[in-house]
Image (cartoon, rainbow, N blue to C red; front, side):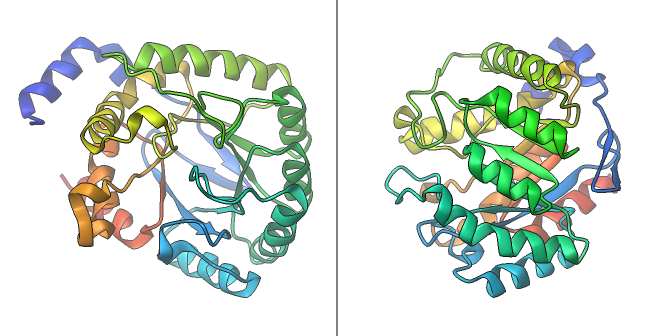
Length: 295
């Protein structure tokens, strides 16, 4: 059971990390003051295999309309992806991904909406940045120098996701040590060095809690791990960069009320000083964050 005593002990043991500031920067001309005001990233899924049905858009027009709605509801950035991260989902090659993504990116950017693209493909990265994407949501580890060079050349930002494998579709087991932070810190420190060496300075760090790992299929193990990482997220701030979290669903616990899961996890993520909340439920997350502000 999560308790006030647990939270007090966590803070007492890591007070310096809790006070550590993170970088603040502009994305697409918009300032983000992450140390004072967390931001929300809304999700548009362009793959029929994505299980969160409310976010699935199977045409460019419906995706563009959802992006507009999410922005109006309070999303500062719209994250679009053309291939599901689920293990059983069909692969989408570069041509398929580009055919789905590029019309949506171009139209949303033409309307002044900030756009992130989730991919691990260099070719999709290049095409998306050329179409105007502001952020790369990087879900792989291969060709990192090439990809970071593209991000830098387009003056974009990058979300570096923790991925225990070549990409999000080819992950192994997750290291379930009692304290996940040292492993995450080492991974991100290496990736930050590569990104900065290639000219990237606008960086988010994402522990990758929504990805499919074979040894996280037991719901109790998975949710305990997710809660633990959320609450310990502030310790990663010592790396100097804002933290992004994709809010999970805990379907085995929430069942028919699954749309309440992301708002619940948003509270834990906020306590852990998350800077960017990736969510399918933008209005609910905005309400949670607005309510926490008044305390």
